[in-house]
Length: 52
Image 1 (cartoon, rainbow, N blue to C red):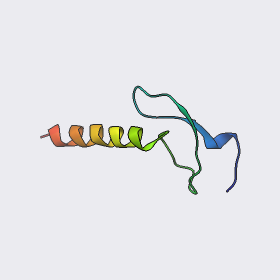
Image 2 (tube, rainbow, N blue to C red; image 1 turned 120 degrees about the vertical axis):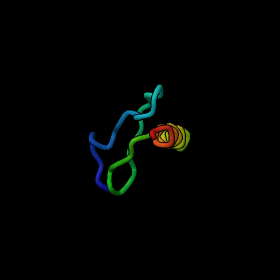
Image 3 (cartoon, rainbow, N blue to C red; image 1 turned 90 degrees about the horizontal axis):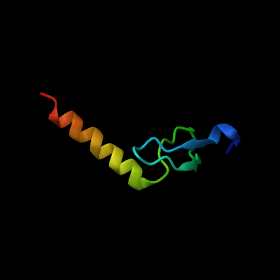
């Protein structure tokens, strides 16, 4: 795993802004934990369902 400053990020979930270290191979992590990931996925799902 290649490391560097680009592997540090800030959680994309609202209102969480916790820092995290991206340990994924692709370097595409967006959330600090599964809770934030699941919460953001549920919000996105609900917004898709509400659209006509």
